[in-house]
Image (tube, rainbow, N blue to C red; front, side, top):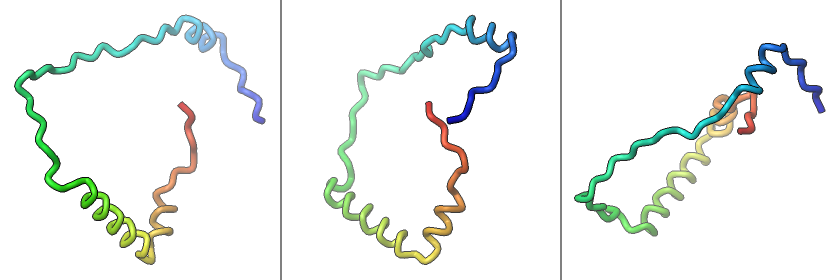
Length: 77
C-alpha cells in the first residue's frame, strides 16, 4: 500500500474549510409533455443490440482498438 503524500499547511487548511454543497438544480416542468412509445418492441431492440455486439466482437481489430482506447489510470469516486 502506498503512503499518502505529506500535505502542505495551505492544503490542510483548505481541506478543513471545504464545505461541499449539493448542486442547485432547476429542472423544467412541462405538464403537457406526452411520452412517445418506443418505435421498436424491446425484444426486437435487444436482438438488434446483440447482433451489433456480435459483429463488433467478430471484427479482427476489436481487441486492439479496445486496448488502444483503454486509460492507464483508474479513479475511485
